[in-house]
Length: 137
Image 1 (cartoon, rainbow, N blue to C red):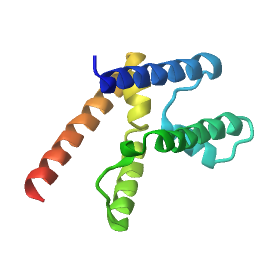
Image 2 (image 1 turned 180 degrees about the vertical axis):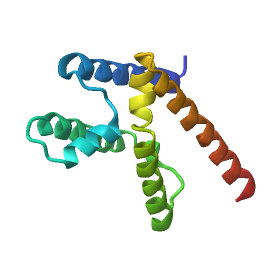
Image 3 (image 1 turned 30 degrees about the vertical axis):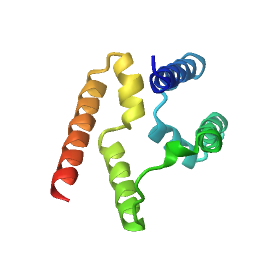
């Protein structure tokens, strides 16, 4: 078994454990857009766990960058592309009532028909976008 496959399996298990723990202990679904949206509202009753979750994401990325810097070697985009991409993601998560992590990881595991449709839609448009940009641009 290759190191990449082992790392992917370990990462997938960690995501599954984290999603399950958040649902079991907090009764919350692990959708990043919902967690971020709730944290930005500064509701004192649940701000602590939301902030901790988000800081865990950021610190995990920093630690990963320190130990495996090549993971972040991706084609660079200009500010215009980044802003347009960010706006599209924000609009998409609003329209879809959640993001890929909430629907794809947590929704499908709970057998949610809405999440299944949302995840299939995300994937189809992702494939379409890659196909268009690779062949036309």
